[in-house]
Length: 174
Ligand code: NI
Image (cartoon, rainbow, N blue to C red; front, side):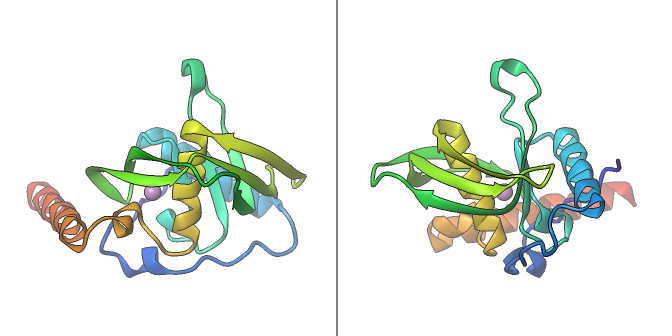
């Protein structure tokens, strides 16, 4: 396993639509998921889409650490279907938009269908934080970031903040 670099806004790769994994869950895909999980734990974060490490494939890893225990989840070629018209706001953040947090309104419950780590087809109902997180990560597969759900002004401020922090970090490293 290896920690990979997480790309941040305004990197154009984050706008890409990710492609389905063809030919099932191979050892290569499992190695990618292992790296993604390690990268996510190191960050630390609770969800990561492959495009955030520059790989445009429909792969997501997640660990909501319920009861403060590790509970990694893997999603290959996920599909989601909202199960309710009820929506709720939740304060989201993203490893590709570090240190920016804002409320996004999303359906509170959805069905998730995908291949798991072993390549089995699985289906489950996501609620609460799981529902928020899987919808946030699904957005990444379509090239959408949580800040794209905010006003243009807030989005611009977020991008400027990340650019400025990155410049400062590079200057301090020089
Ligand atoms: Ni994100």
